[in-house]
Image (tube, rainbow, N blue to C red; front, side, top):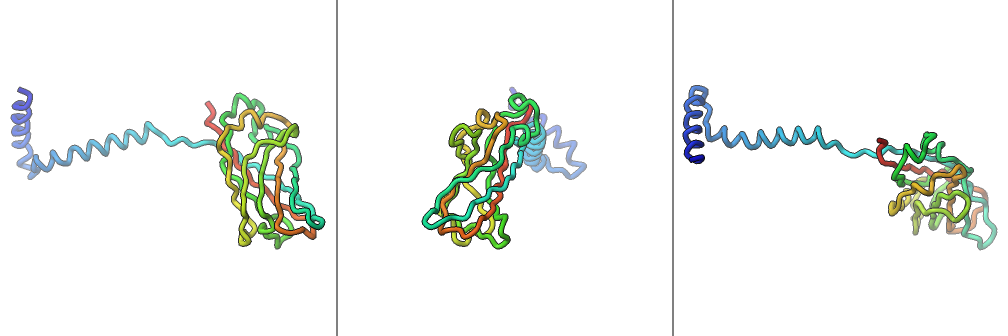
Length: 198
């Protein structure tokens, strides 16, 4: 019977362990945690974490001085190509599942610029043919925002079909809290992520 064979084997092993003062009951209790640790160690080597490559894209946008009662506007960056962002000559083959990883606005000029001048912002990426795809936004910007605003990113869709052109622009729609007496510059800092290359 399998049960009887196990008991006989256990007693035989006990005789060999006695000279070393090793209690077979305690040894039995140690075997299960030891085996568990070994399996976890092996598993960590097999299942490695998924790390998506990231590609930063920074550009400066100039918000012009405003006249009375004009508190909304839109400004666009200079054009940029897909290759300039992702550093590849074979975009469709090398890069896939493009998404926004992070987005922020950083005060650039004048030196004392506080981004609390903004009430809300919406950031689009466009090829110039339409309004573009909303990639990040921020509403109800605090009066204590300082020189750096983290935007809420839009991760609801892949951007694979929206970033393939050579005339890509970043467009900022904004609402001001008050009129601007002079032009101000803000730097947009965008980080794209993609699936791993095969």
